Structures are given as C-alpha cells and as structure tokens.
Image (cartoon, rainbow, N blue to C red; front, side):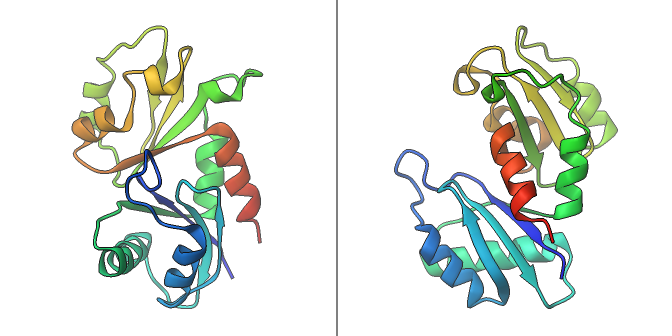
Length: 179
C-alpha cells in the first residue's frame, strides 16, 4: 500500500492554529486515512488510504476534516512517497554541512512557465532559489526566517498555497514514508 505525505501549512506556529498531533492523527484516522503517523509538531503527516483518490481529493478531504473539527482552514499539500523522492533528488544546490540553509517550498498547484519566468526576475542575493514544476528550491545564506523568500512571497506570486520544509525534515519524511 503506497504511502502519502501531507504537509499542513501554518499550524502550531507562534501559538496560532494549534492542533495536537495525537488529535490530528485520530481525526484523520476517523476520516478514512490509515496508518497515520506524524513527524514533529509543524504539520507533517504520513498515511495510507484504501480509496482511489487523487492528491487534490486527499488535500480537500484533510482540509475539510480540519475545518469541520477545528473551525479554521489549513492549506494542505499531499504527495506520494515517490513524488517527494523525485523532488528531493532534483534539489539543484550542493548540500553543505549547515542543513538549515537548504529548504524546499512545496506548491499546492503546478507552477506554469509564465509564472516561473516572472519569478526568475527576482534576485535575493545572497539567498538563492530555483523554480521547478511543483516546488521551489531554496538555499539561504541568511536564516530562512530573515529571508525575503518566504511562503507569503511565493504565495503572492503563485496565487496558491505553499509550505516550506527544511532539508532535514524532507529527508525524515522520505524515510518515514518508505514502504
């Protein structure tokens, strides 16, 4: 049974949109997801499902369950293990010892060529980014929270939800989602 990864945007950050991971696992399990596990408190969920649903259908299923239970919206990005592996494998920067400098911003929608061209006109030196079809690869010389390459910037440009994970989290999610 294939495993999926759900990345939830903006929960448990700065005291906003608090969701205990144990409660989230119970909620998602009661909504048809199976073998639900989580990684750290920032909204990383690994699961399987018996239904034949697309990633976007799974995103809606999770978002609706959270909205109905907690009363607030949480943008969610779902991908298969193989999609996460492909995204990680295509990271264009050389991995340095300071893994906090390496991040991936995941996009809820596909990034079209016109939007990619527009994004390519921005320069945040010394920080760098590279746009791919469903992700934006970041290399932050400065701290990510000080960089102008945050979720809000990319969401404004892409007109869709994004969420960012650091390199260590991406690798751990890949490991946890292996069959």
